[in-house]
Amino acid sequence: MDRLLKTLIFLIVITVSSCAQKQEKLSDFIASQKKSWKKQLLINGEVGTPCETDYMKWIAKNPEAYYGLPATIEAKTFDANNDTIKDVLLYFPAGESCTGGHEEGSDFLKLLYSVGNGFLSNDGLLNTIANKIEEEFYRQTNTDVERAIFKVCDFKKQITGTYKLWTLEDPDCCASIEGTFAYDPFYFKITITHHEAK
Image 1 (cartoon, rainbow, N blue to C red):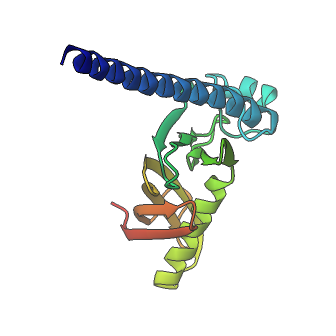
Image 2 (image 1 turned 60 degrees about the vertical axis):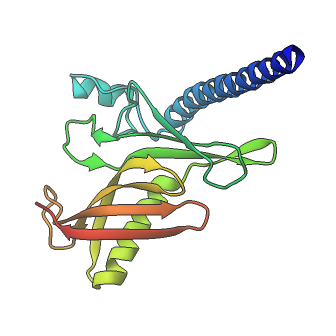
């Protein structure tokens, strides 16, 4: 009996230790991917350095950029492709531009998904999701769309969030439509709800 109890305790300790190591490896992986993605975004000119109070100075430093890099990048994990390995969604809000304008943009996001013993990434989700929202809204309403922006709320089997949409009749300041979306990044399908903006 005493030997059985010792064996059971040993197995529990090994299991807990293994889980802790996997969690630590995932945390390290996420931290390194955030660092790499920030560098990539800056080098590619997709964003500039963090916004500054003096927007003219910021524009001089970041002539090609409109939005700035945030202080933090969010990460959500979920085994979205059902292979027992957690996939990672990195994202951050564009917020208002750093150039003195007030135009908001969609969240920047990057999906890291497991394939075999490694990970691949989908860096084109910002445009894909915005375009799919516009297309689906047009399909449902037969109303032409100027643009749509979105915010990420969660990541499980799908990436979910909220959006604002401008029709051709809307002034630049104010989107007339808002709603929610759910996008499946592996089957490329979107579902949306919509209503008039408040």
